[in-house]
Image (cartoon, rainbow, N blue to C red; front, side, top):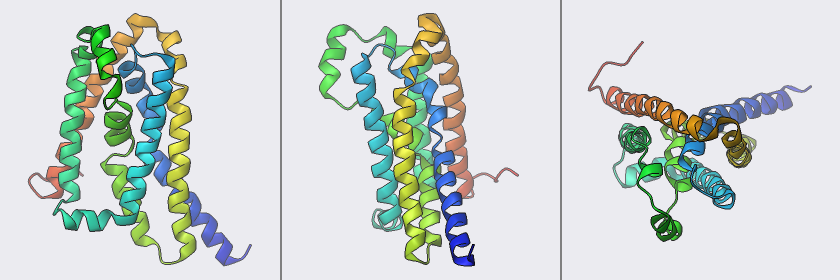
Amino acid sequence: MSPEWKAVIEFSLVTVSSIFFIVDPFATIPAFVVMTETDSATKRARMARQAAWTCFLVLTAFAFTGSVIFKMFSVTLPAFKIGGGLLLFMVAMDMLQARRSTQESAEERQAASGKEEVGISPIGIPMLAGPGAISTVMVLMAQTKHWWQVAPVFGGIAGTALASYYILAGANRVRGLLGEIGIRVLGRLMGLVLVAIAVQFVLNGLADVGVIPKSA
């Protein structure tokens, strides 16, 4: 194999695997199952598509124009980490208190059917296309020097978004394995984990700007 082709393959493998593992759609399955526990199979599939499309569009947009957007609005990546952490924290608190399952009536769910759903936020962003994924695609794009290096970046984004859809759509099978009690217990446990993740997002942002020391 020629050195050129070897470089192409190595860069492509590193790029695609980096994007997929930082997005990590498998880690989103518990939250997706809990957040959609009262929804129909059709609506859950639609939210899985929304999450996948949101992930694809957000990562593609930042890969193209991430640095320009930050400069235009004077937004730094640490600020995005802190904002994403606060949003995730609010979602986690709802999960800990089971607000979605205990406070929504059938009429309220019907009235909310035309509104933004959890597929866009928080599943699509920041859980799939979070600060880590955004910074990863921006760093990968900054490293590209040839046209063939750009293709794996966008190919990795598209492939990860497609895989995220199938993974989340298949998450409905978990409902049958856990049952209603298991889902509620999982919801509170996942909410606790999400609180820790949200706090870590905020701590990372504060560490980036030097407010607190970075952990070793």
